[in-house]
Amino acid sequence: KNKLYKKNLKLIHIGSVANIETTASVGYSIVKSALLAYTKSISKFFLSKNIFFHHISLGAFEYDQNSFERLKNKNISVYRKFIREKLPRKKIAKANELMGLFDLLISGKGDILTGSTVVADFNESNSFRI
Image 1 (cartoon, rainbow, N blue to C red):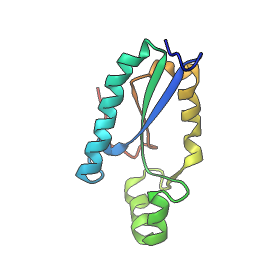
Image 2 (cartoon, rainbow, N blue to C red):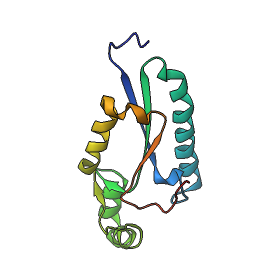
Image 3 (cartoon, rainbow, N blue to C red):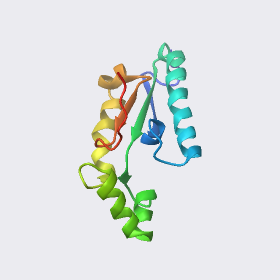
């Protein structure tokens, strides 16, 4: 059992849709894919100790000084082209739109998703698994 906390401990690893399809540099995609594999592997060991690992593969979103906000400030035409060509809803997500997912994963209702990858990208990615 988890001795540090009387309740369950939740850890959320932040990945990217770059771990399910090549949308970024090779290095970035490899690191994000490794994080996905690490989360899946380590979650099996820690589940019996009431420590829950989750993995979220995020699509493009904006937050204070993140890469998409910096891109918007540095090169607005590339930013707009990305939205126009890559985002089905034709707008970039804001960080607050993701908070409901985080709330679910840190609640007991999200425990069933331990070791799983949740893709939160407003259908930005094109890959799927059967």
